Amino acid sequence: MERALSDEVTSTTRLTAPQRPALRLQGCPLSDLKGKLRQAGLRPTRQRVSLGWLLFGKGDRHITAEMLFDEATRARVPVSLATVYNTLHQFTEAGLLRQLAVDGAKAYFDTNPTEHHPFFLKEEGEIVDMPSSGLSVADLPEPPEGMEVAGVEIIVRLRKTKRAFS
Image (cartoon, rainbow, N blue to C red; front, side):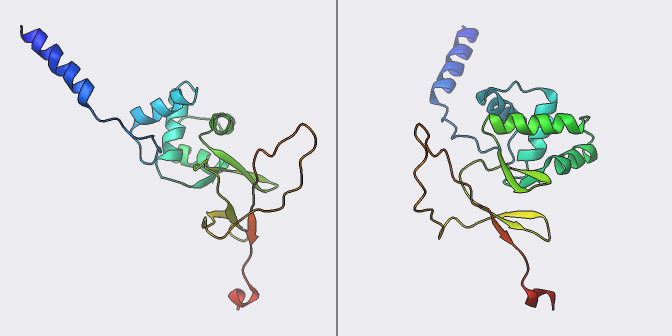
């Protein structure tokens, strides 16, 4: 009898539990991160989870493979730089990250994969998200036969004004 009551309470709890909204991975528990990896079609290996926690636990940001490797080293996550590169590319292909080509020497990865545009601060080598208002793309040329526009990326490169150096 006690077991039946316990089963009934459990099933009632399951039925009445509120549905969680879509995960954003910002400061997410490890179980949510593992679920997000599975949902993206990636097996949540120890290395993916560790790197994912470092990437997504700090909210929206822009990072290079070298920066993530340095963070992993400081956090004592045993990964090679090659594993970091591979994981970043796997996360990008799965739609968890967005790769930005702002500097020919480095690839930056954005933990906010939604469509938005960045400022690139040349002297600092940093990326800052552009405010969403005030930017419009108009008059795109017609794509060639059999092709369609898959996306438009705009990167605004900034440098300090001469007054800023004075």
